[in-house]
Amino acid sequence: MSALPAIAADNSRRRRVRNSAILWALIAAGFYVGFIVLTLVRAAR
Amino acid sequence: MAEAHAPDATHDDHDHKPHGWRRWVFATNHKDIGTMYLIFACTMFFIGGAMAMVIRLELFKPGMQFVDPQLFNSMTTMHALVMIFGAVMPAWTGLANWMIPMQVGAPDMALPRLNNFSFWILPFAFTLLLSSLFVPGGAPAGGWTMYPPLVLQNGASFPMLIFAVHMMGASSILGAINVVVTIMNMRAPGLTLLRMPLFVWTWLITAYLLIAVMPVLAGAVTMLLTDHFFGTTFFTAAGGGDPVMFQHIFWFFGHPEVYILILPAFGIVSEIIPTFSRKPLFGYEAMVYAVASIAFLSFIVWAHHMFTVGMPLAAQLFFMLSTMLIAVPTGVKVFNWTATMWKGSLSFEPPMLFALAFLFLFTIGGFSGLMLAIVPADYQYQDTYFVVAHFHYVLVPGAIFGIMAGVYYWLPKWVGKMYDQKLATWHFWLSTIFVNVLFFPQHFLGLAGMPRRIPDYAVQFTDWNMVSSIGGFGFGLAQLLFPYIIWKCVRSGAPVGAKAWEGAHGLEWELPSPAPYHSWTEPPSDAVIARGAEH
Picture 1 (cartoon, helix red, strand yellow):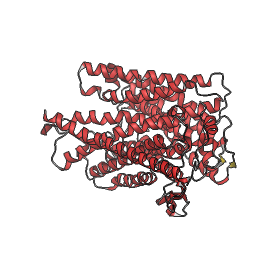
Picture 2 (spheres, chains in turn red, yellow; picture 1 turned 180 degrees about the vertical axis):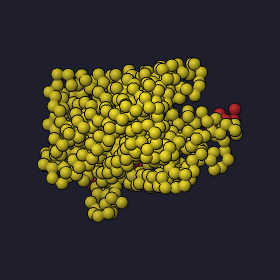
Picture 3 (cartoon, helix red, strand yellow; picture 1 turned 60 degrees about the vertical axis):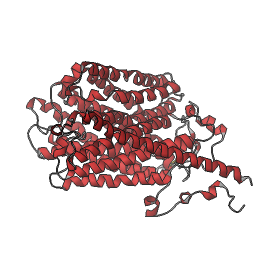
Picture 4 (tube, helix red, strand yellow; picture 1 turned 90 degrees about the vertical axis):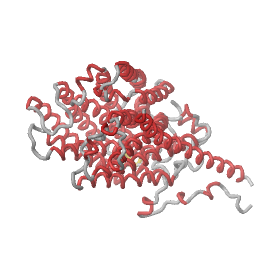
């Protein structure tokens, strides 16, 4: 029984790890797309 | 309750130690991956160094001797790409892999499979890039900055260059995400952010920079690719595009990239100087804020690389002053390192020697950077050897010496043996003398007007070019000592205890030497953290 809190903590950490990895990947993708859009917008002016 | 088991039992298959080639190809252990990164970086260092030898051989005297101009330009371009993306960045990632889990009290990196993928992208990227030397038209020759329209004139090597840069970028971004996620989620309980070692702090900030700017480079080269193959005109003036826009985007990536290459060295020097001064680091928090300030400022100085393309006076003033502002946090760091040594009980083992050389010689590179920040002066220095001297002072006795200091500092922890310190001291002195013989005369050549990226030059530049080339050959030969010292240490070094350096502090020194395959299977206790986190 004493292992249950450890499992819960481990699962919570796994969730945090996955969520923060996804967040930073989305930020990186945003920079990639953002700079291409920025160049397009500037060229369209 | 059959499924109720301890977390260790749910641990993925990376908690055993595989043997043979599987250990490396399917590696998920942070130390194995760190080792692969470091071996890869060392290999690239010697390949990029061989290209530098070709450059210095051709420039030994005026006239064309050994290579044609096209190959010479390929050598300068490839040397830069290989050294930046193949040697320095993977070396830092290797050190991060080895040290961050040990320094934050974690068993491994947060994302071990992603870690494997990040590494294994690199050999493919560099095989592709280096094989472009053998395609019709030769390797990329328009400079590592890939400015259009010149880069669009490359032959078959162009798409190889773009795809290789994309792969290097992907590797760096994935590695950076892993570092951020590890530091933010895997720290031992009680190890607060302001108790972390400076190496961890500088890597955290470097990782943020990587996530912000590597996609920008990827976006820029994607646009080059579509300009070349799909009829777009992002950077083609004839179609309404703007080639100068590429320079803005490239340097928005390129200037933070400079700090990506140097910030982890700040962290390593901040670990080494206290250890060999037997004193806590002077102004720990100020150091953290200084690194964060430098990282922030790195985003608003990019146009100082392109003053001569023509820009409004207000923009020139802004970029000149913002660049000069970087001297303030950098000065804080140099002052704090000096103050740490003040009245310390100093000793001069190889890591300390490299850290001290870093302190003096990086500062020279910083000062010449300040000179280049002054707009009217930059109009004179632009595209001369003065610029070459400046950035090589920052990157060789800066980044490369930082890496060597780090390897000499932590090698005993990695292998549990001490290396031949006398030979490492020889390596230090030969490197330090020859690096100055190599690069200091290039300041004179630049001030006298010698342009960079040329295979031939006017006769009045001969003498200092000969001196510089002799320095280059000496520096190149001296580096052969480095892998030999490491090989000798692994083979027959004298065993060391957990604390290889008696003045060292940090969680990594609380682990036995060599460090166990999984670093902290149990989080360190409060007492261990308190002892390790003394700043």
